[in-house]
Amino acid sequence: MASDLHQEDNELPPAGNLAEASNKDVPPAIAKFVERFYQVSDTPDVHEQYADDFFINDEDRLSFQIGPMQPTNKRDGIVAWRQKGWEGVTRRKHVVNGVFISPKWENEIMLDGKVEMDKNGSTLKFNWAGRMVFDQESLDEGSPKIETYKVWLVYMVKTESSSKFKFGR
Image (cartoon, rainbow, N blue to C red; front, side, top):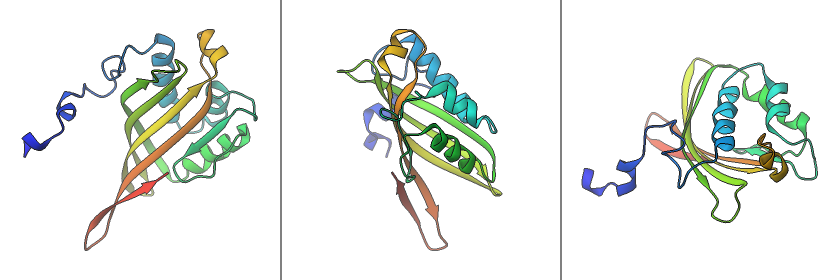
């Protein structure tokens, strides 16, 4: 029944409009960063650019983890993850449904989105949530770099007898 829907489910703005999809105005530097970040994320063979353009180069503060992967604090770990993540993938498209600024820290955001990819002849669809913490100095300078990036994934696994959710962390 439509009346059983959570009210906010009907009020979500069209995907991709960061200003309308956030809990308050997204600062321009962060909105531009998020848009570019996912454009590059969806581009194959730019692994070095991805690591260099978006992440701090400080192993004491860097933390990167997507889904069930082992976290890394090294640039080379990010590049290796990108290379492995693109194996067999012919297309990937992220859509950001919302960006939510922390009420306590202006350099921390939560993201809600979905991603669709073609991999090894199949189309896979995931819902995801992410946490980005930006290096404060780079944010203040208008050129944000990520110091913490963690993504949680939810995807559907279909079998002949049933469908069930599988959660990645």
